Image (cartoon, rainbow over all chains, first blue to last red; front, side, top):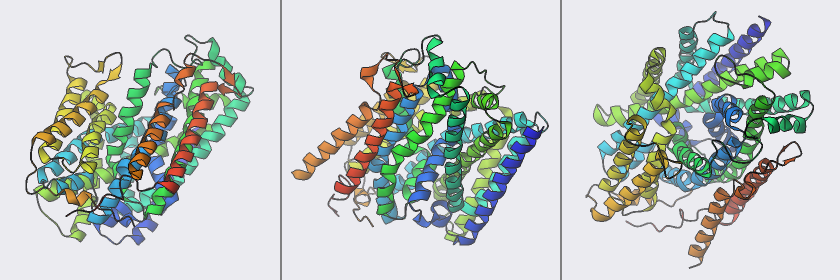
Length: 489
Length: 73
């Protein structure tokens, strides 16, 4: 009981701090859409680093990541490091820095806007937004579902699932509509630091409690398949590489991450951020996933939600500490969702409503953006109540879906001969292929000894974008020069 | 062309960083060093190297492939 009170106390405390930050941020906004969605492109190094970090990694670090290391072995550390530490870092320069320059020069707020302007196509803009929302919507729904389940478990059923998910949704609506990106990024920063501290404290605490890191790690040697040995079981080279590649490229096209490419204050901010990134990634993942693996060696059973970190902490650390980490994890879930809501709303209002329905003035558009947050959050919440199988499947395969966008976008950014038909073909065909691999039994999900359909689809998108561009001529509305901007500061 | 050779050099470097983030040559090894599997230590060291590589890139070649593209039309 005391444990529940502590957990709820910490959660409520986090919410109040978040709300406070949101209010301060609200006082600083100038009511334009650029300010609401991108904080007027003013983020500095620490905030940019941590908002990207927390948005990308939070809920996964506490739940899914350790669970995978628990079931399959600690090699997941390598998958995440290759994916987020190295490949995403390189892409942050290749896609992100390029986007920052042309975004700043041309005033782009979204990916769809950036593509639609270059290819002179309103429908391309709408298509990219619709595809993104298609994959984002169920993913946000999964977060709300996770939050609802966690609150229900935390209170021993006293707060039912719908009330937990609904309460957290309502809370997010309030502070995201208030504060926009500035507030979201500030809370992410607090959140990221808190998360990092908690994971290290847990790692040291558990390691010490079981008689040292070496002793904890050696417990794995006796298990089936010896998880200490690199590779084996689920981890084949094809699996490791295709997972890392697909998710890293997917992450760059996730609306809330892609939009962060636009928000740095200056070139110097990005230059300072990039070298810090791989270190931050390794600092978080090594302890988090080693903990998951230790749990397997120590014979810990997962809890009713299928998570392993909470029971591990309850076994080896005091109740208050376990509560702190668990409540922190729920807060982490919120910090991912709030960014997704904001970006989802910007895609909805700027790239669907604006081109198809009406072109509002700036002030009105900022209000529409807030309305978009309310609509998006409410719909995902309602969907989370029904737990539709199809939606769950889309959410689970979202990274692969976003990955299909990455290579056509990359080609468009660097190759001025890319044509409208080329990018339509690359984006359209890879999406259809990937969707078919997820939903149709006749299209396999794995090729040539373990390469995922996502990677195959990415290659298809690349070949089609280049091939179709080569045999078609650009229409008069296309303007490659908008991507040739070189002004850096 | 100096910048072209340089670009290829940095690209090959980046590719090597990606490829060797997993120590393939330690496949099957279960040696534990200082409390963690030896291949986890390789990975930790490798990501620190990645960090240094990124830092060197920001100092020596930032803008490569992006900023020096000539502005046309």
